[in-house]
Length: 108
Image 1 (cartoon, rainbow, N blue to C red):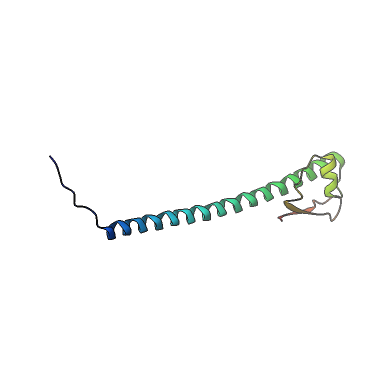
Image 2: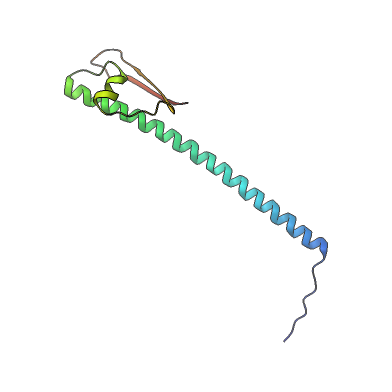
C-alpha cells in the first residue's frame, strides 16, 4: 500500500531546525561545564596527592634519620620527591625536628 505523506511546511521545518540547534548548543554548554568540573577535580586531586607524597617522604626521612628534614630541597634531592614548580606552590614549614612539618600545596 502506498501512503501519501503530507509535505512539511517551511515554517515547521524552520522550527525543527531551530529546536535542533538549541539542543545542540545546550549539549555543548553542558559538556564544557562538565569538563570544567572534571578539570578542577583532577587539579585538586593532583595537589592532594603531591601533599601526601611530601608528607610520606618526610615521615620516611624521620624513620631513617630520626628527624624531619629541614627543607623541601632535602626531600627533592635525597628522597626522590618530584615537584612541578611551574604548576604548584609548595610550602614546607618546620616547627621542630621532631614534629611533622606543615605542608601546603597550591596550584598556580
